[in-house]
Image (tube, rainbow, N blue to C red; front, side, top):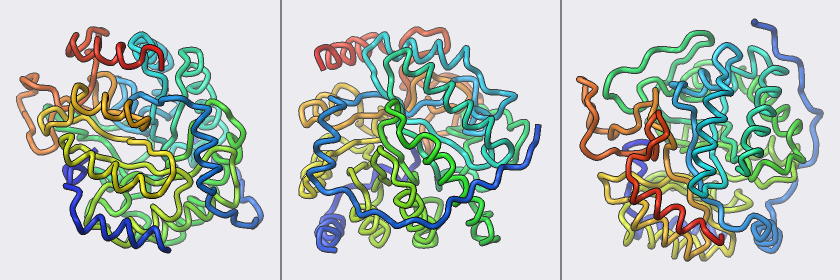
Amino acid sequence: MNRFSNLLFTAALLGILASACQKKETPAQDTTIPTAPVRDVWTKEQANEWYKHWGWLRGSDFIPSTAINQLEMWQAETFDTATINRELGWAESIGLNSMRVYLHHLAWQVDSTGFKDRMNIYLGIADKHRISTLFVLFDDCWNPVYQAGKQPDPKPGVHNSGWVRDPGDQLHQDSSLYKTLERYTKDVLSHFASDRRIVLWDLYNEPGNSGYGNKSMPLLQKAFQWGRQVNPSQPLSAGVWSQELKDLNVYQLASSDVITYHNYAEPEEHKKWIDSLRTYGRPLICTEYMARTRGSRFDNIMPMLKEQNIGAYNWGLVSGKTNTIYAWDTPMPDGREPKVWFHDIFRKDGTPYSKDEVALIRKLAKGS
């Protein structure tokens, strides 16, 4: 999702993995759940039995093309069911069966009941298209400040110019926000705790990104604690993504029921991650990959993930307001289309960026 996500898998990370193996604004309702026991991490046997029921998961990190960020997707005024339905239909047409979707606590805080209703509507649309969902709760990527209401317009040619962190800098300035985040986490997880349309809860996207480092550890730990107190039927995870964040990696790998990870590297480096993460004996799900100009493509990564029975979620379904056809480090202020798209599969009219890629995805999906 960001320029750091393609860090190579080196001996340093191998050491981390080995170490981990050893060790209308209405106020949100007071949905605090009484303190409950914190369940243990699933056993390997539990995790692998759970994974058998899903088959090969393949999909995208999804936001409708009409939304610039998570708030524009989920706020009542801009919740665009027509676009969601149309674009998930395109996903279904090429054999994708799952989507990774970001939430944001502020949309819940403004209207907790409406927010959950919209989540349920989304799940209904996705299920109609035979698409399951992997929800993301927190995120350390891109813009640190956000507000409810109208969201900014995209900056021409700038990748994810309007994406917002959750909770971002606010948490480090006001620790009382933890109480809100606890209510949000427990309310959402408990409301959908038995929902079979949900694959898993990705509690925290790329913790430590944006220079936060270990400042993200307290929220990461609390997110797992809150999640285990609710104890939904779905597994809990937080994907590893950077070799440099040693303490966070150790905690994420030791705490996740199933192993999720991000990798935007070429096949040789990606395979090193797979080989090392396999030592955990748990299902693997790659929740971000595919950056064409960095050598991570459908033709050289997706077949490997299928062969290894690793869940495969590429970044981006339809080119839209997030501008993720542009690379992290290569803005194009004139807004012209790049010669090679960085992310995304479809244009806004439903035609594919690459007919060959779509044909490959269909072929890999067939019979899975």
